[in-house]
Structures are given as structure tokens and as C-alpha cells.
Length: 486
Image 1: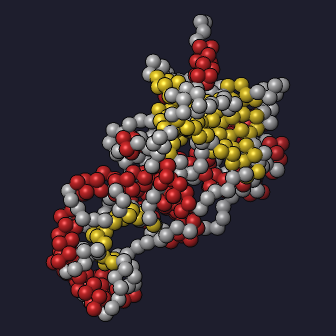
Image 2: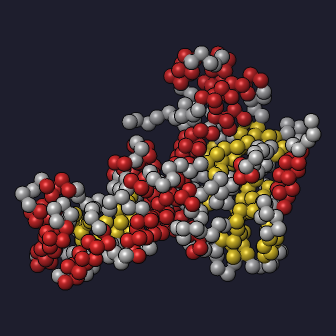
Image 3: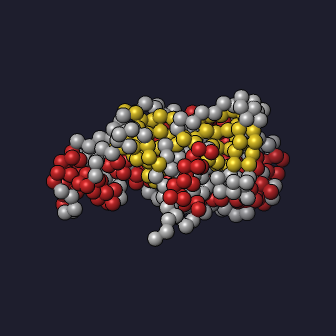
């Protein structure tokens, strides 16, 4: 699977609209599109944005080669002058984005594109495909890691992922959100992240007996000796045979630096507690007790409530597919069109009978507001580019729908941070993506800015995403302008 040109990774209507702009409008008309989402997946109190590095790769390589042009010609939909235009196509606009690993909330732009309308239109599908998938898996992984309460979580989902790309980039997203390693070797190579794993039941079954299989594995991997104990009889043979091997290693002077057992079936709470008793009685109280078998944040939480002694979790299918919520729901909407005469951006709005689907117009940015004494997030404020705020002054926040709900922040009680950073300027990348493990550490720090009430898995507190007074008035003026009599 060699390097691919992803330029045609788009919906057909992006290209037909491009030709329409080319034929009927000014193809160089500058517009603003926002990529955002309307609801956190899995009913979470937050999301984790991810995928920006792959968006950068996509934009940098955006071009139509001869095979692409020939294919488009074969559809019979596109005129020769438009196809000739595509031959020299490159992205020439600006992109702003929230860095990967940042805690984000509904309705705020994760990516803002300022570009000629044809360019901005083309990149919609691929941008959403990349950001939606990785943000979904990162959010799911963050919830699983939270449920593990400090225990290591390993991403084991490759064989159940929806294809190679989902396995590779899903594992990348899971690492960003806090997993300590992945079983995916190609992901490890591509992104320099730890790879981890034990052995399968087939290893045990291929030997004359379980003890021989354990001894052989321990001899090969003495510094990473996690033995799968449930092939035949977990408590009757698996754990006792593992203990025999650990004793033999200790007697041979082999340091037991990283060793233990893995459970992959049965009643994990009961089996882990009984296994812990046997290991403790044999003098192996520091042995790792790892578990796998269709785990997710709900099951991990339940097992912990039952007193399970598991301290390492291998999470596969339910993480890599985000099984309970299989899509992120990000959208890409036109927010403004530049006036050719003045250079100012004219706000645009999409209406809907559903309030949550009405878009926020204009050229916007996001200010995150923190409690100065705790460092915790108070709210996010979507405002217009050019608006200024001074933390030495008071700040009034209000709910953009239920406007009577207000919060007054006293001078000096809060700090501000702008979330959107420049990624492309005039078609040139001006942003260098950190390494995945560095993004992982940044994500850990980001999650620490959430109040515990927003982190909880069930019925979390919702962080407020408010509009500035100026943006709120522009939005309502646009709404009022569409309410006319026939």
C-alpha cells in the first residue's frame, strides 16, 4: 500500500460545485468555512481533537495528477476548461486550527479555512473524514483511560478496526488520549510510539503442555513476561503454572522487572481477585494482572467497583471502533464571504428549525477562559477576530440561547487563551506538529484543566460555550433579517 494521492478523496458534489463556481462565479472569491461538531460523542462532557497532522499532509500534497484528470473526464460531467484549471490546482489559502490533544466542546471551530471558494470547497470531505475519525477515537480513549484510574491502558484493536487506515490512525489517536502503548507495529514505526503485547492462546496450544509454553516464553522474553493464563483452566492450571515459572526465574537469578498474567475470558472480577490471592501467597505481590476481552470504560468502571485486582487493561474492539458511538458528527459550514471592495468579511448564517443547527456567522476565533486560582476551565467564548479582552477588567458571560443565564467574572480572577493557531498562510504550512508522545503529554495537561464533574462518565457537567456580545448581536440581526412577510 504505497503512498496515495488523496485529492479525489472527496464527495462528487464538491467537484461539481467547484465547476459551478468556475463557470458561474468568481473562482477566486475568498470565503471562510468552519469545521465544528454539535455534540460530544458517547454523551461525554468534552471531546479531544485529533488528526491535524494528517490534514497538513493532505493539504501539502493536494494536486490532480494526469490519472485523476483522465478519470474525471471519463465521467462526462466536467468541461475541458475546468479540467485544464485542475492541472495546476494547489491550495493557496489560510488555515487555522486547534492543536491536537486539546479539550474541545460543541459548536466551536476546530478548523477555520480562509481560501478561494473552490479550494475551500474541495477540502471539506477529506478534512472532515480525518478530523472526525481521530477526534472520535481520541475522545473514546480518553474516557477509557479515565475509567482505568491510573492503570495502564493498551490499545489492542487493530484486527477489529474498519480497515488499515482506521487501525493505524485510530491507534495514533488513542495514544494521544493517554494509552501507554499499542499492539499496532506499523503505528509504532510511523509515529514513534510504544508497541506492546503478550502472546495468544495458539502459543499455549502449540506446545505439549501449558507449563512448557510458559517456560519457553519466559526464556525468550524475561523482561516482558506476561503469561496468558486462561487457555485451559485459569485458576486450576494457568495461574499455578505461571507461578511455577516465576519461581524458576527468581531462583535462576533472573530479575522480575516486568512480569505477570493476562486474563482474556471468564468473570474477570472474580478471577483477578482469586489470582491475586495465589500470586500474593507465592510472594509475587507486584505481578501485573492484565485483562482484555471486550472492555470499555463502562465495564472497567464496573470491574473496579467489584474490587477487581486488575492493574493493566488491553482494550480493543470497543475502543478502536468507538462501538457505542461510531461517528463524531463534525460538519463544515460557510461562515463568511469577503467583500471585494472593502476586504471585510460579510457574515453568513445557515438557518434551521433546530436551534442547535443554526450556525455562528462571521470570522471567528475562540478564547478559553480559566479560573486564575485553580487553572480550571470556566467557559469558552466564541468571538469575532479583532475583539480584545483584558483580564484586568470584569467580563460578563451569558448563555447564547437562554440569555438570562449569566456569569460575572471579577477583574483579575480569570485568564484567557486563544485556541486557534495559524497552520497555513497563503498556502504554505507555518505549523510544525509535535511528536505523538508530546501531544499525549499535552493532552494529559489539557484534561487536567477540566473539573472532575465534566470528566465523569455519566451525566457530566457541560462546559459553557458562549458567544461574545458582538457576535451574538450579529447572529440575531441575521436571524431577524430572514423573518419577513410575503
